Length: 106
Image (cartoon, rainbow, N blue to C red; front, side, top):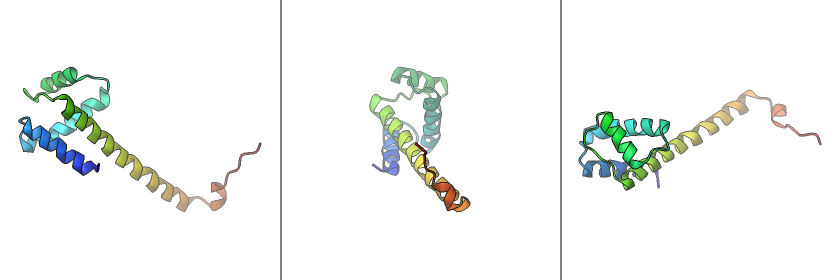
């Protein structure tokens, strides 16, 4: 599923559980930042941290949290896929062809 579709589903779910639409982008960034540094947290711990960070009485359910994780992983994968191809093109332009043909002596 494309990242944009996952993001839209996530935003719709957050709106359904009571989050104001204008706060959703900031919430998603906060959640991503928190999960990036605390990837082993369970749902109860995530909700407690979000409450501590000032996100009020909002409580994520299991499926919304999993959807958010799926979105973050898909977004990261897209960033990862873009970077190596750009790097390979740059390296190919700046390296003589002889340097790219490396053989391993047995």
